[in-house]
Length: 88
Image (tube, rainbow, N blue to C red; front, side, top):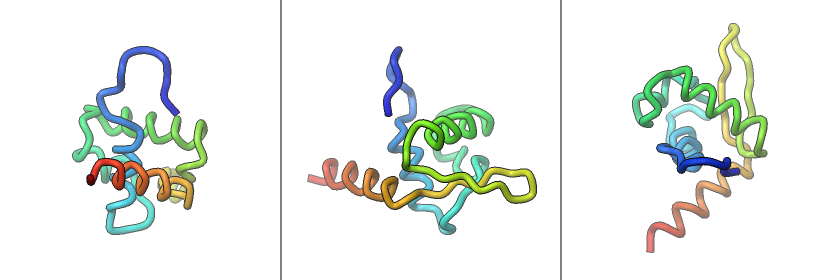
């Protein structure tokens, strides 16, 4: 899931976590942008699109020409494992 090069400012797991804790099962990039330090909605959208294409953690549904992002069961399991590892 990681990419070569410098460490990312915002982890993939953090992006997945923001979807997990949202009130709805699906989010727009703009809805989580203020919770992550990526600067712009487009930067969040780009990262979410990359996660959707490179992993099995996110599915995209297009509604009124806007991408809605939701976690898959694998995405929820990934976030849960990361949170459990950090709790203790």
